Image 1: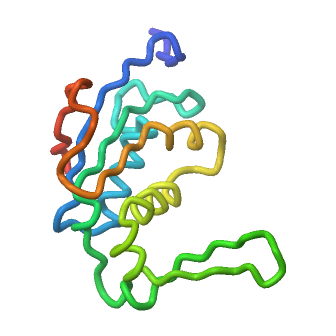
Image 2 (image 1 turned 90 degrees about the vertical axis):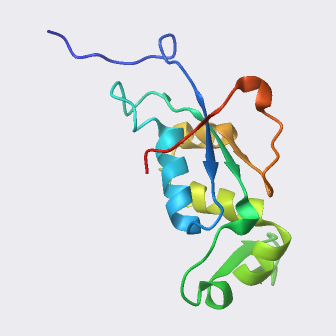
Length: 143
């Protein structure tokens, strides 16, 4: 019996919905990263992009435990001297909860071209409404 190796021709992609309401940001991001990478599939192949599409709804209702809202900081740099900008997660969750979720998922993926391509399949929405009803997504309930 030979080992199955997935390739781009036999990868079947599905759409899943993750509801982040009342759940920790990190746990939701870890589940999304697993689905994007395809590690939940029995035919997972590490060097092939065999993940699924993930829709995260209610990103604004995700919670951060402990003192992370006040102590955790998001840094970005403009590229100029003295161009370091910082934003506390309390402000980030109020203004752009979609960005906070995307950053969390991105941090849980490997640093390579497969993961950069997988991030294009992540769709994050602030509320319960999303624009991908035509794809008939399923609710992910494994964990």
